[in-house]
Length: 305
Image 1: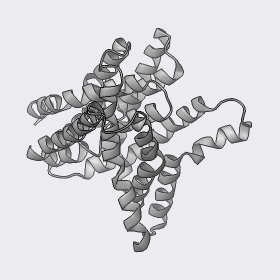
Image 2: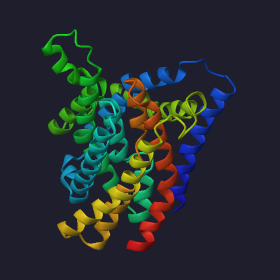
Image 3: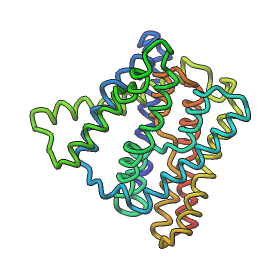
């Protein structure tokens, strides 16, 4: 339990430092965008490359991973349909859909998995599955939305393949499949660059709470509530239902439920900021689901253990 609380505490402190830095005017305007851009182009690609290059890919096809990704796609699809009915822009639909199903498997998933099961392998599998399956689809949509219409069709269609995060993931996959190791003289610098990704995301998130519209006051209350309910209620229930249909035992059902109840990933906010697609919506859903995740996780453990 201590590891779980420590995970939430660490995230909260770094977000708080970002908020205070903005409130005390220790950093200039535009820092949120700058940090998000550095994370997007340098930190996260390096992080993805080092994680995937060292990952055992057989974990990707584990039943909990397949069920979690399926549940994520289903609830994301529900938000997409709601967004169409509400007349949201494609960008708002995509960010809301991502926030409804893309889980924070790294910062919170690993300590929660260790607490619940004594093993981080399932959270690592979900993290890897998201990086290889869910994130590329989201990036494809964002890149196509961001195309200005003046580039050639070939350049537009290949733009997702030039996305830094996609490149990092694909290179990591190549190393993993080939069984290659990252040379020591390159591994340390890449790990150092990758290590800036998470704290930079959290600092930018905290600054946005001070500089942007107040949380839940950005004019997207209905959309935030829908995404939060889909993420924290519908996704765990869908995961449990799919797990029962799959015939999972009690332990793996708990794995699926707890994984599905993880909060929305910080990446959602970073991508929304970089692509200028509904950043307040992404921020508010990430914040609210992070606050709700601990009590929801504890409730699931009490009910299913």
